[in-house]
Amino acid sequence: MGIFLKNIGQLITVAGGGPRSGNRMRDLGIIESGAVLTDGENIAAVGTMDAVERLVSGSVEVIDAHDMVVMPGFIDPHTHLVYGGSREEEFALRLDGVGYAEISRRGGGIKSTVRATRKTAEEELFATGYERLNRLLTYGTTTVEAKSGYGLNEEAELKLLRVIQRLNDSHSLDVVSTFLGAHAIPEESSSQEFTKLIVDRMLPQVSRLALAEFCDVFCERGFFSYEESKEILGEAKKLGFKLKIHADELSSSGGSELAGELSAVSADHLVYPSKRGLNSMRQAGVVAVLLPGTILMLGLRDRPPTNEFVRLGIPVALASDLNPGTCTIESMQIIVGLASLILGLSPEEALVASTINAAYAVGRGDLVGSLEPGKMADILVFDAPNFKYLVYHFTTNYLTHVVKRGRLIFSK
Figure 1 (cartoon, rainbow, N blue to C red):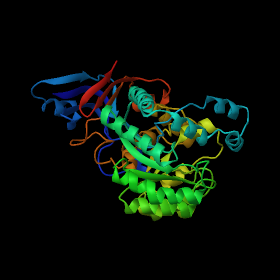
Figure 2: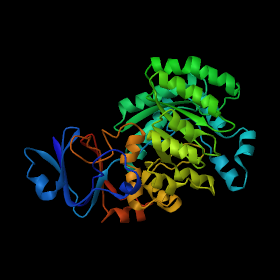
Figure 3: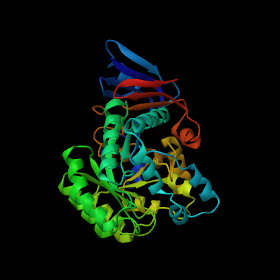
Figure 4: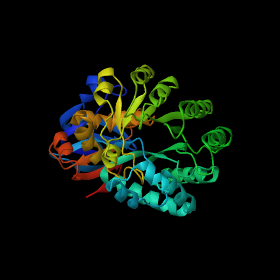
């Protein structure tokens, strides 16, 4: 049975073409007094109320969205969804002025989560991951990328990827799996030894077991050098993985250049990209994934050169970077608001960045991210008069309905 969303006050379609860049990031494809009709998992029709209503036949589930905003589901293209333990003590230490290096010296940071994750049973990781997905759903996320990276050895990384695969198979949300074995250097290894392990053993295993679609690497001083990152991503590309890269987060480390050189799908963080890196990304069509929640929670003064991305025609996407250490924000609504306040994106640009551009950042732009016939029916309904009101009230959850793959999975 299809769903007929009628009397929509403001329908945001973001329809037409590929990822939006430049001035096109301000085009939401708005239809006033609109309607949407679904057929099975997909969208059958989008348009004005009069035009779509004429196409309704047979039994349909009706959602009256009178004076409401309807838009595509949020896509979150960068999360560390599955992990063990918690790091609230580190949060308190940062508030007291203790830096990351000192926290790490005391046994905190990524390695703290690695120790906890290695000890946590697979079933517990699955249960807590499932609970997180339930919460993401209530904020309007319908597709989410999830990385490994808190195992840092073959056994634990495969455990995380199995959990991510099970979450995708069992939950209503679509979960895109990324292998991030190269997240940090484990305490028991050197960067050279661990890079060799990833290339010689872990990547072939993940590929053989079909546990991940993407491969990611943290290209940064003190983590994985440009050369090590290139070796890992180059081998991953040979094995058929799509590529992502943690790029230029803490310094200009060459990550943006490497993203363009290897034609990565996305480069993420990008606080300190070089001009050469920006041009490399633009030429290769790499999506820039920005993470304003991490900037907020770490209290960083520097910002990604958002205006340069837009000026150069690089598509900008937004993500939560949900993780236990540097960003615990689960709501993409909050991320959209922070993108306007911290990064300077207009409400239109922020919504484009969290829908269609975010879909392209996880290789799903042909399936989700916009409301147009033939795409999956991933649809949000907000009890808000217009999209600007929605972004203006970004800390208040006005979500009333979530349709995922043509099925109503949340309503209030």
